[in-house]
Length: 94
Image 1 (cartoon, rainbow, N blue to C red):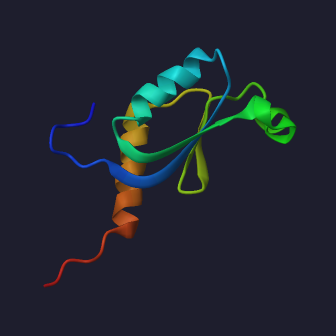
Image 2: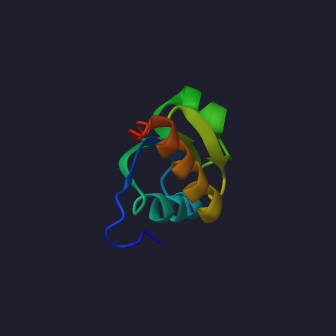
């Protein structure tokens, strides 16, 4: 999915997950090749998160905004990461 020599996104990504969740595994496989900063949080370790996200996992948060619940779209993920990179990129000198 990631092109050779293409740098990984510097976006901060959090994946809320739980044990035995095949969709969570799928989300991780899509995100890992594209992003260098990923945090995994098991919702069952925190009752508040378990209540908040119960049947919605995986939940993928990019730079503090929840972007996916349940299933991750590869095309939309790439577009969101490119958009986030554009927000932090410094303007090129003229």
